[in-house]
Structures are given as C-alpha cells and as structure tokens.
Image (cartoon, rainbow over all chains, first blue to last red; front, side, top):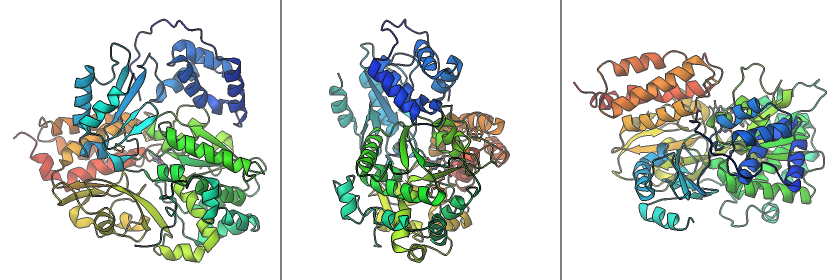
Length: 169
Length: 407
Ligand SMILES: Cc1cc2nc3c(=O)[nH]c(=O)nc-3n(C[C@H](O)[C@H](O)[C@H](O)COP(=O)(O)O)c2cc1C
Ligand code: SF4
Ligand code: FES
C-alpha cells in the first residue's frame, strides 16, 4: 500500500473551500456518529477541488476535522485513489488483474505506453494523461477494461483505446 | 433455466427507478415486515438458510441474533458494497440496476435488529453505481420510505481491497486507514463507532425482501440442505458468454460454465477454474462436478467466497496467472501482520522469477513451505485467501511450473 512520494511542486492556488463547500463539509460530518467518518468523502472533495492532495491540503483538511495532519497523511497514503502529486487532466487506469490478464491486458498496457510515450505511473509532458495499472475493478465480464476518470471503458481493443485517447483533451 | 429472483429486473432499462421497482412488487415485503415483530423477522431469515454472499458464508439470521438484546445505545447496519474480490462483479449489477432491492432489504434488516442508521460503503472506483444508488436513496427519502425511523448514509471508499474485510471496512468508515481489527469482539458486539453493528453484503440484503414476501420455506427449498436461495455467479475469463448468472446454489460448476456461460472459449478445452474469486483455491478440469454452495466447495477443498468464477482454457499459463494473483496479494496486504506482509511480498518475487524462466530447483518446495505456515495466525482472513491460490496452483499444476525451471 505504499506509493513513492515525490518532490512537490509549490501550490499556487490558495487552499480553501468555498462557503458552499464548507457547508457541505459540515453536512457530511453531521451524518456520522463521529464527524471523522466524513474524512474520506471530504478528501475526495478536496482532491476534486485542488487537483491532488498535497501536504498543504492534508493540513487544511486536518484543520476542518480537528485531527492531526499526521492522521490525515496516514489515511491519504493508505488509499490508492488519493494523489499526493499533481496528476494529469485525465487518469487512465488499466486493470491488470486475473480476468483482464487473460483477455490481454498486458498488450494493452504496452500499447498505451507506446502511444503516450510514458511508463506506468507517469504523466504525459503536456499534463494531459496519467497512466496507471490497477487491480480488479470488478467489471471482469467486459475484460479487458480500464477506468478513464469516472468512467469504465469496457471490452477494449487497441483501436478502441486509440479512439478513447483522441477524446481526451 | 430456473426462475430469476435477484436479477429479475436487470433487463428493464428503468429498473433503478422507484416506479419500476414498485411495478414489479417492490416494497411489498417492507409493508409486510412492518407488521412483524423484529424477532420474527430474524427467525424467518434463520429458517430460510440464507448465508452471507460476501465471502464468508455466515448464516445471516444467526448473525442478526448476535446483537445484544440489552444494548441501550444505537445499533448500526453497514452494507458492504466494497466489491473488490478479483473475478466478482455482481454487487455492481444490484447497485446500478436494482438499487431499491438493497434499500428494501436494509429497511427490513434494520427493523429486525432495531437499527436507526445504516451506511452503504461503496468502493471508490464505483462512481456510476454510487451515483445511481445515491439517486435511489434520494427517491426513497422523497417517498417517505427512508427518514421515518431509518436513515441511510452512502459512503465512498478510496481504493483498497482490504476495506472489503468487515473490520477493515469499519476502520475505513470511521475515517481511518482500513486496517482490520482482531476479532473478537465481533462487529455485532462492538463494531462501527464502537457500537453493535451488522455488516452484510449487498446481495445478501437483496435476498431479504424475497424471503419476507414468499416465506422462509420457499427460499430454503430453492437451495441445498444447508444453504437456501439462488445467488448471482460472476463468470469471466475464457468463456463464450461472460456475465452475471443467477442460479440456485445447488447449480454445478459444470452447468455454470457450459449451460450458462456458453462453454469454454479460445482453445475450447478447459484447464482449470477459480470458483469463488481469486482467493478460492483453483480446481482442475476434472473437479467441476461440484455444487456451487458453501459446503459443496468446502468439501471439494476450495471455497465459494464471492462466487466469482474465472475460467482458464488449455492455452492459459498457470504460472503466469499465479504471478498476477501473487502480485495482487503483495500489493493489497495491509502490512499489519508479519506473516502476511513478508510472505506475500516474498512469494510474489519468487513466482515472478519462476514465470520468467529464472527459477531454481528448490523454489517450488520453498514457496509451499512458506505458504504452509502462518495461515490462521493473522488478524484477518486476507492471508488465508492468499495462501489458497499459492498452494493449489503449484500443487495441481506442478509439472507446468517445473517445466519453466532451468535444469
Ligand atoms: C480480504 C477480504 C476481503 C473481503 N471483501 C469483501 C467484499 O468486497 N465484499 C463483501 O461483501 N465482503 C467481503 N469480505 C467478507 C466480509 O469480511 C464480511 O464477511 C461480509 O461483508 C459479511 O457480509 P455477509 O455475511 O452478508 O456476506 C471480505 C473478506 C476478506 C477477508
Ligand atoms: S492478514 Fe494481512 S491484510 Fe489482514 S490484517 Fe494481517 S497484514 Fe493486514
Ligand atoms: S480483472 Fe479486470 S475488471 Fe476484474
């Protein structure tokens, strides 16, 4: 469950939620017997808002929960969906677990690497796409498959992947 | 083919709406349950022989009866929608295509255990299922089904297989990293936020309205002596028609592969089957005349787990497949227990080396030796689930591994 930490680029946008977002944070916190239950949902909000979960974002979120930044850091580093470094405008996550492996996921990963000119775990120089491999996304009936941002892309072929990449700006 | 119960609405394009659900008899069980004593609901579920469909196969009614009767504080219901067992995709179908079945099951379960607050923990990657299910919850609130003594919070995970383990799930729901906890205490005694908690799988709860509607005897009669009902089998890998197939739990693996999923693809010749998600020990082509219930697979030396069936045809390399599986367990171990953390990492490297043709003569015996220790000593069953494939793949396909090792 470890992910390499990389030197952080300085953050230019101020780290603060809008008044509406703050109200949403309070609402989420009120849903749980202990407000800390809302930590994962609020970290999702933070990532959507600030692009990734930097140390500054961790500190800011910790403040909203009266938690130590160390606790928030421990949580952020445990889960695969929080990015601790800037990611591309789109994230392409190819499943390489068993059923996708049987359906040729390895070839698709090679195809993507070659098309994008990057390795798994890297982002294209124009900041357009981050390429990842992930474990079973539980859509094995449509293997091989991948997740592109929020969407599942199913029954992939190299040609289908090329069409999908063209649609990502 | 047998009657569709859980999947009866899957083909309706509007099945996720309250109107469609009601049109097919939805929420009638909830009406009926409101006239029943909580203890009578639990009794009915016990008699139905419903067993948990998330992996462990624990009798559901019995689990519900473990909530302490004298407990004065709140009781929570936590739905495990963290579907992550490789080869499994059934809960996604319910969340997207029949979300009200889960909500109705939750309402009835909550009445049975006197619970006023339920959480649905949906894996973070399931964005569409999360949106569809959240929409159904809003509809249920607007219709006055929720918010009248029972509230539902939809919670999103953030990517970690181990959060599917019930105590890891609870840690995660509490805003912590998803580390499993030592049992006992079991969640029914001390669970989410320190309170008695029932953790049930999505599909388990989706069975409950049918039990209430049509009776425990009917449900029990659908299955085997020790497990009632139908369930949804996820079938993938080298088959002609991969997909979710509902069948009575007495269905055989052979029937699932050949009658439901259209037979073996690629070479057309069966080599092996993973019958219950990647943690289930592998079966050879000669071992598929087993019934796909909890006890049927236990007697066959494997487990039904999440009922995710992954089919290998003759052309599949078993060592390559084990390398994929071993990488998964090494990646997902939460690292708390020494045997799990160390062995999953070490075995991943060994298997990879063998699959790449760089193994050494004693490697297989060393792996088997390492894998034969430590199971049953760890905090959670994750490690037992890793050991199952290590040992079974190597023992049943040893010659194929040996052929890769330079003489
Ligand atoms: C490593 C591991 C992963 C698990 N993943 C899931 C899962 O994704 N979904 C699930 O419902 N149960 C999963 N379980 C089983 C849960 O711990 C628990 O038994 C189940 O959610 C209880 O619900 P049920 O009795 O209705 O099956 C997992 C167990 C282990 C050990
Ligand atoms: S068995 Fe493995 S996954 Fe389970 S608690 Fe121990 S280290 Fe974590
Ligand atoms: S193995 Fe790729 S979605 Fe399950």
